[in-house]
Amino acid sequence: MFDALATALKQAYPQFTDAPLVLSPFGEGLIHETLLVQQADDKWILQGFNASVFRFPERIAHNLDLLSKHLQQSPLPFELPLPLLTREGKGLASIEGKQYRLFDFVQGTTLQQVQQPAQARMAAQAYGKFAAWASPLPATAFEETIPNFHRLDLRYARLKEVAQDQPSLAEEEQDLLEGYLAQQPLIDYYVKQLDQLPLRVMHNDTKINNLIFAPSLEKVEALVDLDTLMGGYLMYDFGDLVRTVACNLPETSTEWNQIQAIPELVEELLSGYLEGLEGALSAEEKESLLFGGEIMTLIMGLRFLTDHLEGNVYYRVTYPLQNLHRAKNQLALLLSQQTYRTRFAQFAAQL
Ligand code: GN1
Ligand code: MG
Image 1 (cartoon, rainbow, N blue to C red):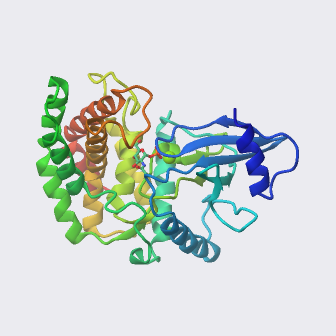
Image 2 (spheres, rainbow, N blue to C red; image 1 turned 135 degrees about the vertical axis):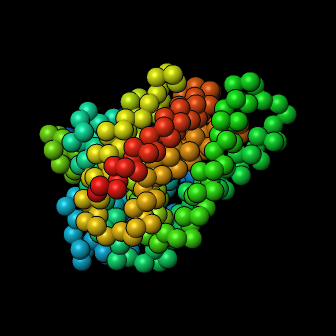
């Protein structure tokens, strides 16, 4: 089924020999299409680049260039895999009207959910270390690869607009919409942060499955998915980690009544993230981390619900109601996190 693609890849990239290439679907990403490429004992990752989501590939290239220069001067204890170059020296290969990128395969394991608190801590340390490592880079030199990507207030306004344009809403949609609209106070908190937090170079998509662990799960080998690397705030990266680590069920779960935040894991993440940062953060930033999980869960829920109402134009779905279900899942997680505000504040005060 991938014969034509395999032939074109051999022409485009110098890495391959004449031996057969075996391509197979890989990973859980919702945006790019990901394939594993095998030739004899060698492996690569091939991504079908989603050009409708990432409309400015030259900005990604610009940012990754700044990143790789910094990496040459200041090493990290894990890899940041960058696109391999075609024979023509390009990071994107155009094949049958689609764009592709090839990456070296990093041997290891990805987790959809952590199995032990120590893994949560390790993940948070890695993302914290990454933020500290990136802190000398001027955030304004990085271009916005998706404009206003994490602007919670704008995503909230967009959901309202899209909902108003619907001729009618089903009861389930209406209830969910109201659940989200009731989060105005969190939007107000977020907007205040924009004036007091320093803009930093952030990863901006710190799902647990964007880390590759060593097969033993005792070390982080790589941090992947660098397309949203751009200006942002610590609360974004920390928050997406809370969203994807400190929940008892995955983002795909439809057992809404069971979905809960795991406070012990949030605390593990907070300790680990601060360790990774080695104290290099302001008092305002530290406080904002406490709301990071809520903010990132809210923004994902708003985006899922908006996409559902718009007819699933953004996220890949495997069934028509999946974005509605993802939005329900995220609201349940958000409400659960909000019951722990006092506990988290007390915990953070001791750190
Ligand atoms: C998307 O493709 P993936 O799974 O790495 C999305 C993130 C969301 C995530 C939700 C560019 O990331 O913002 O957190 O889905 N990436 C983009 O699971 O929209
Ligand atoms: Mg990803």
